[in-house]
Amino acid sequence: MESTRKKLITLLAEQQEQYVSGQKLSEELNISRAAIWKHMKGLEKDGYKIDAISRVGYRIVAFPDQMSLNTIQWGLNTSWLGQRMYYEPQLDSTQSLAHKLALEGAEHGTVVIADEQLKGRGRLHRKWDSQKGKGIWMSIILRPPLEPQRAPQLTLASAVAIIDMLASQVNVKGQIKWPNDIFIQNKKVAGILTEMQAEQDLIQYVIIGIGLNVNQTAEEIPEDLQEIATSLQIETEQTWVREGLIQNLLKEIESVYEEYVQNGFGSIKKRWELAAYKMGDWIKVKAMRKEWDAKLIGIQNDGALIVEDTDKARKVLYSAEIDW
Ligand code: BTN
Image 1 (cartoon, rainbow, N blue to C red):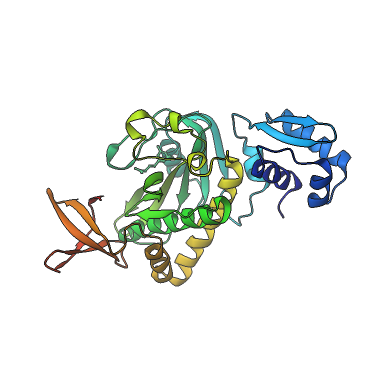
Image 2 (cartoon, protein in one colour; image 1 turned 30 degrees about the vertical axis):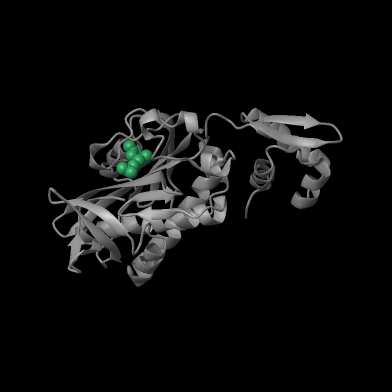
């Protein structure tokens, strides 16, 4: 059940420019005006700044700078994912803490979240900009009963979960750029970094690291990335409550993971291809120290990318950089 508090925040967050009357809130939430007032005081205590005008209504002026573990876990609607959760205001990288916890035996579905990362990392040893209070910086520990070569499918499945969350919660259409970038309107909004510890033929654990730009304004995106990166705030002109997005994202990841374990990669592959960026278009592929034009055809069952060269020869790529 969605908590009243969460519904209240959502109602106010949807209408940040306008005041929402106490009457409307009381009708929508089915609670008394006195109870609404009490909730407002609670929100203020947790760092929300509320503007209240008598006989007009309420408006959220500012959201709390920091997330709290309590607020994330309150409305969490999962069976196992995130039931064990670590939240830190500041970490070097949630990936590093997740590795440490996994090596110490942390259970399948453990989640690590930070409000800020000092050494956030992306694929190919790139830095991942992780400003305080601006995004979702999260690592998930999974212990899937799979062979190591199937781990890339988990990255693709997580990308599908992010797309579903963006559609249902933010009402935006995201697209997936193989293997791990989430785009909105031709700019990157999120990335996934999958790291794994495996024995010969069995995954010991996988860490799915997700970075999602949420509340950065255009000026807050680092200058060298402004042409290629975006945030939910930039795309929707609205501030987002990260806790609610995390709750929904974890729900989507849990559901896609269960579908994957029960039915295999087939249906997820279809969903991935439906959301794929530039599917059927000409792209520039950089791999094996070469660069060439090719058409994006799809992905294989093992998660590898299929492209078609100008002479119609198909190639399967396990590692490549793609440009347009
Ligand atoms: C990429 O696009 O290259 C992947 C970016 C992954 C960033 C996330 S933020 C949470 C987790 N901790 C990190 O240090 N990296 C991942």
